[in-house]
Length: 313
Picture 1 (cartoon, rainbow, N blue to C red):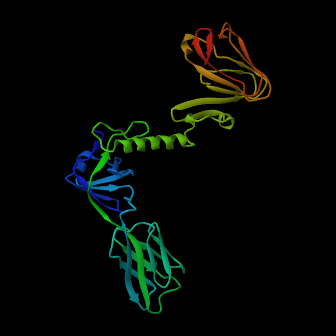
Picture 2: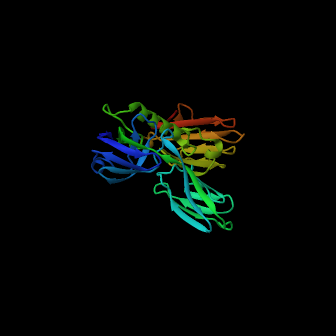
């Protein structure tokens, strides 16, 4: 099956824990599967399966419509260089925690930075806070007040766990019984779009002359080209795929025979001078024994069709 959706789940916004109701996560779910709440667009990767009724996601569940603003008066103290306490409300929404205690502390990824050089930490799940006031330690009565966003609970939510993915690019698959099929489809399309736009995937974009001018083996996903730059007369070999000609020279073509039928190559004139591709013996390139490249960037792609014959492709 491509998805699992038995029972329901309880979540807390800002937490990575998913608690199941009448679920069998250990039987059907594995790390790497994709979790989503029905009707919501976001997908989350399953980091681990804890029990039959509990999962841990690789990122904290987010929903800006289910957050509550909390203002909490923590303590009043007369003298301290450090101070620790626990907040009364959890989980804490990352990046939205501020505390005032003789200086203002703000949160970034659980690390607190004070306006007067103080430092500290905040635990999003347990609410544990530690403060080090640094050089500006408390020496008089000071009020410690916290303001933050707490994630609200969302219980008995319909959900979907996608278990099946395509083998090459791990796109989510779906079947007729899946819910939210349109969102699964949208997720797959966005993954394809991101892959297509990646500069690392040069097999799906035009290679520039600079990229092609690299001698040696050019390897990309789904494509392996042996690229060679030549500046003197050269005899083509069966391992050559792209020849970059950078001088007025002659390229001697590989002998066309049934043993190398299907062999393909490309010749590109990078120089401003003419160069020539010359066939061996009675071989021809669609009837011509030689092909001349007169201008810079003139090129030819050809393939061995049979004995003595190249065809232009």
